[in-house]
Image (tube, rainbow, N blue to C red; front, side):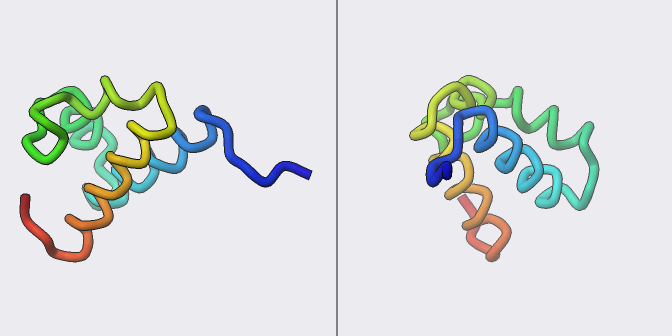
Length: 71
């Protein structure tokens, strides 16, 4: 039994959370993924999607924004 998600699985979950943040607009989500984001050290989120820590950083940012925090 697997108890830990792979990077690919986490990436899929994160992408869905990003699309949800943009109310289902995948084009807006894709633009955001390619844009420099201050909360992520002015890096585009897509550059962090290759590692579990990077994906977690993105998911934490998305969660804060969805809860109303502004960064």
